[in-house]
Image (cartoon, rainbow, N blue to C red; front, top):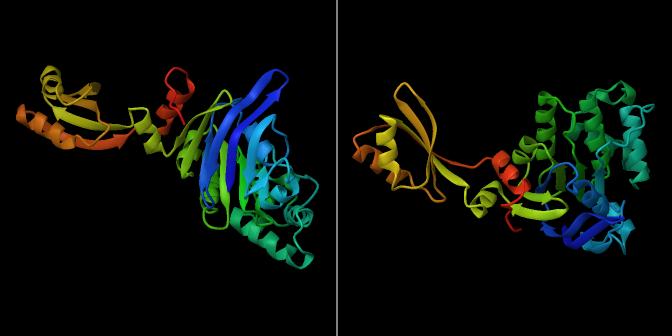
Length: 311
């Protein structure tokens, strides 16, 4: 659905993005993750035919965004970071207006508006003036206008911006509901839970360059720190550390009432070896769990500099 090759955009002497290359398959929900100013919005605007690239290529469903922008626009729905709403209109009135702008035949406009409202939980707000809506509902209207014409590709720029925790969960559920054959979704955000629980894969951008891509598990493995074993052992701290010394790198996470909690770095599953070491030392094993490094830690490692992973 998206093919990006060497995409670069300069503003004067400043490169907002440099040499971006990636592919997104039809039906995927992809998270575009980066700090503010990393180049996410610039990339989405190029894919949405709002900006021209300085160099490189971007294809949407086989159509070049520079050579065939009209064909690209017919296939996309775009939610910019500030939803393009008309406050004096009602929700249904506005969505019908957008549907007509996007070329939906007159006989289908009403059905498309109803469909978009149902997908975004706006059916009960059809007659409500947009000016009366809360920020969360305005974001929903922004998503609805992006999908009212059934686009093959949805570009969502920070859809969770400014939402409270409940609204964030609702927005996450909304985006998850768009997954499937009808839509491909590229969602940009710096809100880690939104990306982690919504998307199939991640593209991580830093200072205009792609520093990693893949699932959370793949990123963790690539950084050499994705897997770990969390252990709770009853016994003296020194004895516990001595028992696990030969298993792998060990870090004490806490100690209370004679119970030591540790993390053993383990790219592969080392639980059998950890269990044998603890029991063999005459210690009491209380808990043994395998986990992976969370997105927050991966994100910080990828964006703070010094230990980025190659795409």
